[in-house]
Image 1 (tube, rainbow, N blue to C red):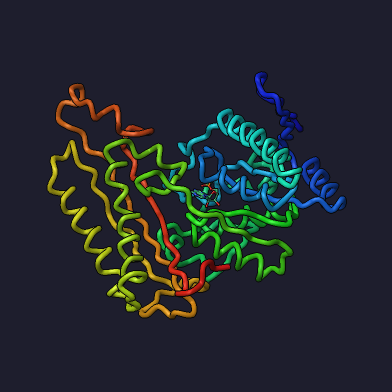
Image 2 (image 1 turned 180 degrees about the vertical axis):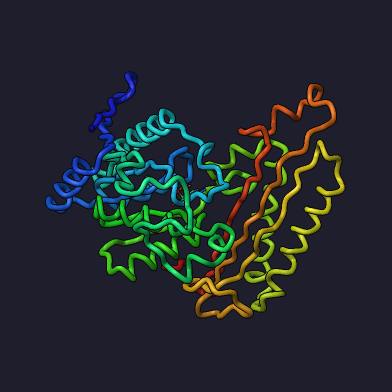
Length: 368
Ligand code: AMP
């Protein structure tokens, strides 16, 4: 069933984003556009949209006439003990954010003489639609079924911590790409391994799709925006900035100190992470936010293999993940003002944060 989203009453510019829940109507709409030589872009998301998602949509609208945003919380990329059930779902707010952005794009279109694209559709399928013969609850690695697996890239880094995660991502992306056959797809630099795995899938399966990457959007203190940041709460949020700070510290070793050896680049970052973790461990339990380092990686930009030395011709991907542990309660929770700031879920869950910085080859301004 399609629904036309009407503009907010006060708006002077119209938006007519079509919402698709089923494949045939979306497929035939995309096909019509492509046959009319209109460029089609896809921005895959799991909803709970924030400024990072919206920047990808803006970028897609700069390069294409029609932008489609998929909003689907894909069960096969969640591990059995992950947050599939509690993952933030904010459909009304997402719809409003995309309507507002479309109105902004229309204004830009007017100013730029019609060169900017618009948001033409949102695809919000049910799981039965995306997995017609297999309704998986989550990523059970032993499950039989039709999956897309890209190895060894998918087994490294995030894949080592979250087995099955990339199998879920590439499987759902393959489905979305088949349904819409977009000219271009947009992914965030924030999930650098995802961009590399999806590019590899498109290449290895000879797909005629251009995979483009948008810069990471951050909060003022450097924390990368993520739909999961709502779980953090103020206490953990203050400490979470250490992730980006550590990456910047390592980047400084490469850029400013001219270091190329693994230990020279990573050791100062490890020291910062370790001293921050120790300071938290020493603090009062009801005030502290403890975290554990999952990985700190210096890897080849194409294979994601760990590097001992950075090759100036290729540069490297510097990435890390930390686990913010559940917040600890004070003896008397009734009298603690901090309780309000434990985040969505009451601060009881571990929140995994990841981030990265690309170390570009000296002299180059951008990696493809
Ligand atoms: P998600 O909804 O988390 O699956 O993310 C959908 C897309 O948005 C992915 O390509 C992410 O890499 C991208 N994304 C998420 N957070 C950010 C961010 N802070 N800046 C830029 N892109 C992001």
